Image 1 (cartoon, rainbow, N blue to C red):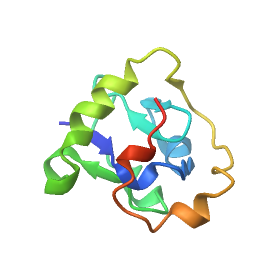
Image 2: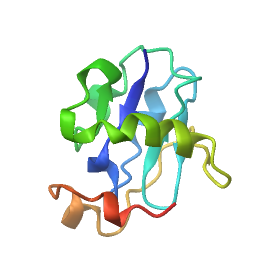
Image 3: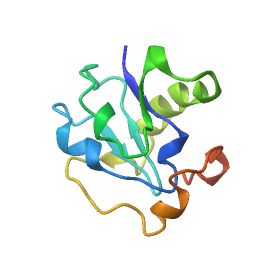
Image 4: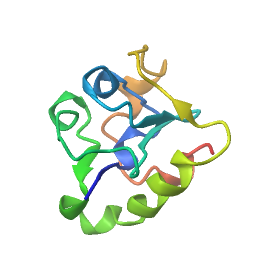
Amino acid sequence: MTHIVSDSCIRCKYTDCVDVCPVDCFREGPNMLVIDPDECIDCAVCIPECPVNAIYAEEDVPSDQLQFIKLNAELSRAAGWKSITKRKDALPDAEEWKDKTGKLNELVR
């Protein structure tokens, strides 16, 4: 099993999770993070670090977020989505977006 980042991360991109990841499995896109399923060791230390509750164990992904299992795998291998290992500032308008849902159409690949 692995962990996934859901749509709550889109347009926020808080990076608290990357500081605690022991295997550097996070990949950074323009306005979201994803988890590389081949690198994730299912340790779960990232889950409580996410201020928008965007990270789930694969078996706990809500039914309306299941597409993010495939999306994390796809984007973690996409050109331009590089490993991120150090915390950065969230996106400038993250506070505005953190409580919004249904943000898949806002994803920048």
